[in-house]
Amino acid sequence: MSERRRRAVSLALAAWHRGLATIGLTQSERRIAADAQSFWSDRSDVDWKDNSHWADAPVFGEKVPWQEIGRRHLDMFRRGARMAGFDRPWDRVVEWGCGGGANAVHFAPHATEFVGVDISTESLLECEKQVKAVCDTPFRGVAVDVPAPEAALREIPGPCDVFLCLYVFEVLPTPEYGERILRLAHRMLAPGGLALIQIKYDEGRWLTRPRRRSYRTGPSQMTTYAIPEFWKLAARVGFRPEAIELVPENELDERYAYFFLTRP
Image (cartoon, rainbow, N blue to C red):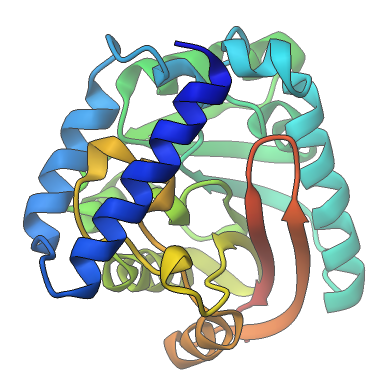
């Protein structure tokens, strides 16, 4: 199937499932979480490496260099750090949803320790391999199951100075599940630390609302937030929102909002 036809099918499925959700035919978070666990554990899917951001994924040969993804995020983080007045050493960096290491290879060289959290043990091994290829920073991989993300806290040795979560919130089961991850991020981040968390934003149209059903047919369309909604949610959790950087569209997708959050 051609890329154009696949995209058309994906958009049609998105419209269909969001239409069903609009009339109340949603699935429970428990069901969606189980489907997410199955999806990210299934390496037989043709798009698995693309979705997991591995260096040899076809998408990075066709649309954007793999190294460019993390480089952009590091530059963005530095801009946010200047705005937030964050200038402390990075003793520990935690990336929730590290995938194949596209961000880790740029952030780990500046850290004393890098912790990658992911559903896939294969991605954790790949991320570690990529980090070791560029620096001597110790890497700790933490495997987590979708239904129980809080279990990751037992595997992380202490608070972090930097928390990253990029291209992840959109594939979480529901917005309510996203609040759980946001609360975990707040617990992990040391006072004075800086988090960079990216969401896909809701433009107020029914086609950009959360899916709430059929995870496997559109993982990157599952969870969205209105920009003011996520700002208020972060503040309610205990963060101090410092700034937002918007990317309406890039080579991979559209409607990205990057939040810079500090812990007072």
